Length: 563
Ligand SMILES: Nc1ncnc2c1ncn2[C@@H]1O[C@H](COP(=O)(O)OP(=O)(O)O)[C@@H](O)[C@H]1O
Ligand SMILES: [Mg+2]
Image 1 (cartoon, rainbow, N blue to C red):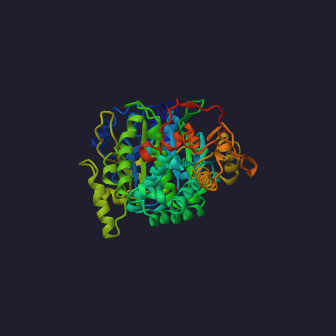
Image 2: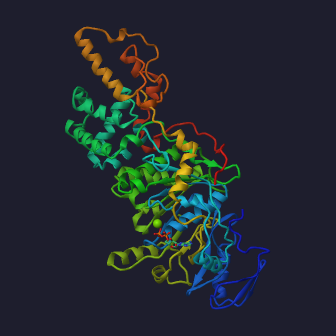
Image 3: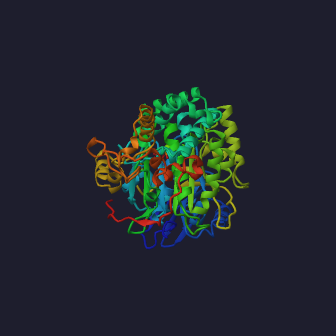
């Protein structure tokens, strides 16, 4: 593990920053008079002494002076204890996220980033030195090597990465309610609709399935609603309208199959570095309810699919939620409870989560309390509300005699932060103002050319490009209606012989046309088909039970690294 190297051994003599004194750096020794109080540096060294393998954050700041030794680190073993990167706009949150993500990849940990502003794809290209970076490198005494990292891009529209898709069933009623902006009553009706589909063996794969079910329940199947107390035809009608709206926003591309396999996130390159998967969200920036819910779905899927590993030397995956307040905006109590539970329990599956947001206040207390590693960039205190948020943020830090926490929080510069992390024994380190080291990759997006080259050569992009259309609720309901019409007319639709029943394999809807569907011999056969049961059987378990697949082993990517 090289990430925490503080001094380039054997490097040329360098003039170190003008932090009030002149000092020279020689291989592994420093000569010079430090004007920062030795007491503070000693305390920091002591606090971080047992970090072991760690991610380097930066160097200690005090009274405007930076001690050129990158002491402040997060132990790799503590990264499944989650974290928060907070601060006002433009204070350095995204770059902090980037530098942590890069070092995780270097340490062999896979990383997932949500890129709301579209400024993280540059992790796939090496950074270029400039005066500001040079200055920061000197300030922090960090061995900076411009590097690119293995990156895969994902996208909800399929335009700027591999198409991320989920079935409506695995999304579950709670998450779907969040996307649709439903209130508690409507959510409980949607939950009953899922229950109904579960009972009747109707697989909800894509949006047309759900719409077919809702249409059926407000039309021909209205009588069936009676068995499900509390499900009114009017409310089902409301759901239908909300769905149509979401469909108009392009829902058909992200609901359906093939569903994204979360094991695709858990990959390492042949050189041992962890894959950095970046979900490009700039093209759906105006649909926060949609993308934030997809992120929750991913998290829930990880929770469900990954095996228990207990506490590990380093996590298997670290998940970064940028603009994390969106995850909680408008979430129902039931959903918040689920999220809180997933965050608490996912730790033992070797997954760490970082929330990135402006103020700690954006995160519910039950989740905030679980975030052991804190990088708090500057907060502004213009309004009374700001002031309240500042006081609240200050209160979450351990006590220190070295800093006035509130004052520090309002006076930190860009790319500086107040940091406290969990030391290997689980105790929080005292807070230190820290100048963060620069990321090694480019701080900004890939160019359009780099982007299209990358997308064109990605096997993952190809793998998810074509939707699959399998027999599901829409077709089954159509048949049901047909069957009852035929029964009324006295004929028997079961005469058609076809032993394949529903789900006789998946078919690619190639060339825009639909492959002919196998005809079931009877409706019963369809409903009882093992495939329909498997898919439909999981629909009512909510996000905690969304996916019950067998965990697969962590894989090494077969394809050579391109960058
Ligand atoms: N660790 C860092 N190293 C180098 N430059 C940084 C660092 N942190 C912040 N910066 C500079 O500050 C700018 C704003 O940071 P950014 O992370 O985009 O802010 P935020 O995400 O909080 O809005 C960056 O574009 C970069 O120039
Ligand atoms: Mg940002």
